[in-house]
Image (cartoon, rainbow, N blue to C red; front, side, top):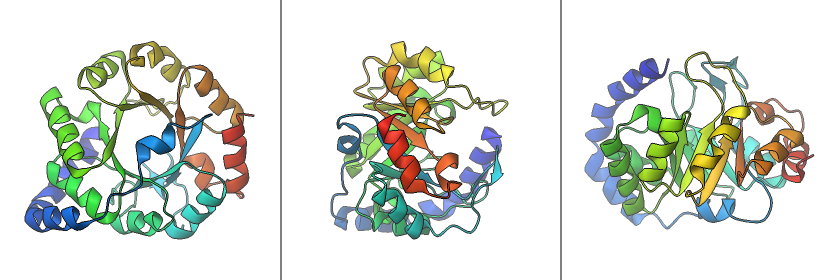
Length: 254
């Protein structure tokens, strides 16, 4: 599935590259966004609340959601930052979703499959404070190049890992924020023990995020006890009847 998504992404890159000069110029005119890194560094467990309509593993989650309205509900519940899926084919997202969410004033993470520097500058233009880099999709040279590009653009980076080897590669590349995805890319199973297992390998990462599989305050507390500074929560929040109440529970860790 990952390779299918990456192939789809590569197919959209030529059009984006044709606008590279324009995007770079526009990005340099954009005011600095709110700091994603600072938003995760406060006391207690931070919650990155995710806006997504669907996923390959779970199908439709909230196909008719209004990203701006959902983001406002997340903000009212005390989310530290908001993640937005912008991948169109498999997640039904778009850059316009992120731009709508950025009006909340919270830091916004562009969650997509970033393979080319032009996508970094596009992220800045559409209102992102940070972007996702997936170690499984990049070799070491590509990872370092994109980290440098993001730094040049003034964006933070959440570097996502799934295995021991990926965790080591992320730390060796100098990643400041490392996220462990508890979802297995091969069979889509989810196990919070993945984050617990990899936590000792991330002691040199200034900030650590646990992704996927967090549905309750008890789950968030478990990740905090394992040494994580933040949790990224998508499915539970987009399907919740009262996301603000669930956010309170997640932040309280109970």
